Length: 101
View (cartoon, rainbow, N blue to C red):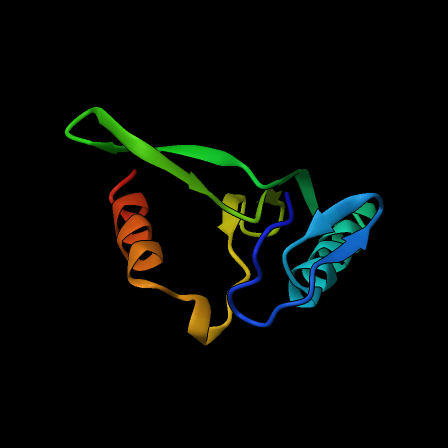
């Protein structure tokens, strides 16, 4: 079954991986180059992170990329979004994620 395209994005394949948009595929290419230059490490594609409220799992957030930035010494969870794709559900999940320490 084909995935319905909601925001006029174009599914793009790079390195055998299907991305939801050209913009997301481009960001993957950039992160891959940063990884080769040893600026980042532990690059993961579409990490699935449980959403917890009062220690109760209420669902999952699937980001686009997760990696360790060696310059800032922090793990980064990145989502490539256009303005139109920042839905109320996305905003709610983002707020829940921001409560994590």
